[in-house]
Length: 161
Image (cartoon, rainbow, N blue to C red; front, side, top):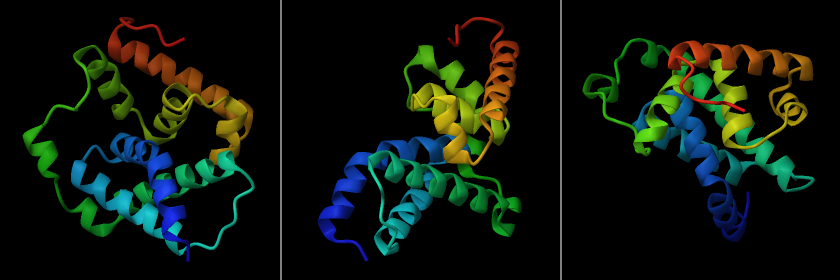
């Protein structure tokens, strides 16, 4: 079990990343908060020792993605409709980013992960490959295909480079 100081430091350092990943995957504020708490509870209870800060950040990203996938696959989740979907609340983003953000959130999960990690977290393809356990060439292919999907969705309005 980790100390309070370690936990507070991790929350300060990784809370934005975990929260954004949850929003990208779940598109629901309540589920985002649930997974956010789950991820940091797993951190507090884990005995994993990290080699460096990048290893620790990669652990948080991997645990968050796995927790989001588990929730999406759950029996309860497949039998309900979120209140956010019913009310269609706008995202808390500036207007010029809303279209892009919505387009990224609409991508299939395998594309959404690499786009998020590359463009929002500034990871390189080799780093993304290590985090997601994918071949570097696969990451490049997923990035290329996702950019094409975004171009089609957004009608070429935005530059993704």
